[in-house]
Amino acid sequence: MPIRPSLSITPPADTTATVADCLFCKIIRGEIPAKVIYQTETVTVFEDIAPQAPVHLLIIANQHTPSHLKTDDASIYQALLSTAKTVAQAMQLEDYRLIINNGAGAGQSVFHLHLHLLAGRSLQWPPG
Image 1 (cartoon, rainbow, N blue to C red):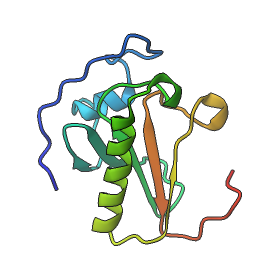
Image 2: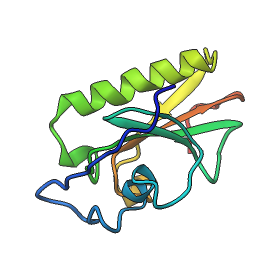
Image 3: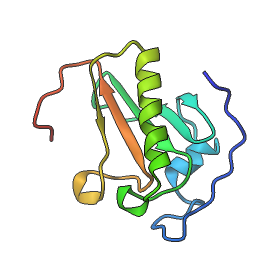
Image 4: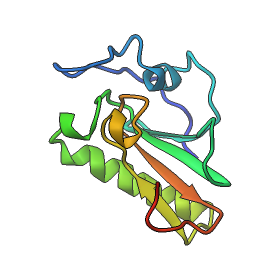
């Protein structure tokens, strides 16, 4: 696993939470403890503090982006999905679910673009 590099986070022009007060930005900077299991220059992965499955990881972009609707940068999604695959393979997960919640009505509680990776139990459909 990569060693945690020194990261700098720059805010986008339009943001609902500033980089200074964003919970996930604070985790990236090491200001709030989290069980970080993987980190690169572009992505950080850590365990969810309120897991909804035996494996519940948050895969977050290190660049502060409030939501799915606030970016057109495909490289962010490439990094998130590639990291999900890397972590799932390292954990020998074959069955898992990836989720992006966009907006409070869809369950987004931290306004910083991220994926949920859920695994370790049978996941029903439809969710929610």
